[in-house]
Length: 117
Image 1: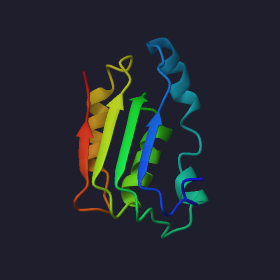
Image 2: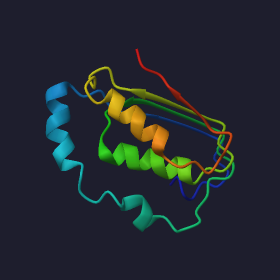
Image 3: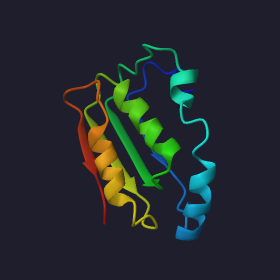
């Protein structure tokens, strides 16, 4: 749906809050097929009109991080991306922040705003 929306300007996604015990159980199951975005989306697929992304209640799962990487890599007009981890994920917040900073961005003007309590 996202790759077929070339005129998308704003994207807001909110994950579900997971308790810490649920997080560890889900993490091992979520590591399969991490190349989904590269396999399913044609190379050169861009979201040229996308200006603003707001993602909240993230659990630092590998699939979430790969989706963020995809959005940053394919949004040349991106201005701001707000990322907010779930309050249940305390031990992986620093790791998440480090990963986000390392991701390549198609837009030199893209501002990454990490919102943490």
